Image (cartoon, rainbow, N blue to C red):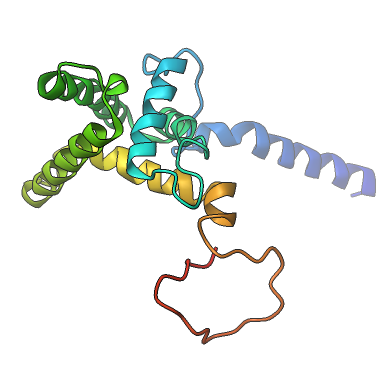
Length: 186
């Protein structure tokens, strides 16, 4: 075998691997025009839910980290069809509960009312998870809360401003003194 033939065979193998890889991927998928597509209003709505869960304090909140957009990408690309359905129906249920409790959509109620509503939903999801069977779908608020925390603490804002951050650490220190109230390390 000549060098040229070896390069050709390797090119064919690598090309086939790259082209054929999509057929073997069962995890994240990205498809345009899905039935569970999110609108700009949906993203703004999810930003407000996330901001209620992680509001701005000394550090920027979830809305500044664009957690709503993160949620839509994760739901569309990485969630199974049944979980996508639960998530989208959950968005509607939050608005329905808001209308029932306050006679206004979630986007129209004040921050204290939003907080009270989400605290109620958090208690509901905790109770649901205690009684949940393995075959039952996850609770929609649990999905939203997990995505909010994941999106925020993996964002640049979450890593560099909400936690202690050293861009290029010098050495490993196995035991670092901790003072109550210190930020976690990113």
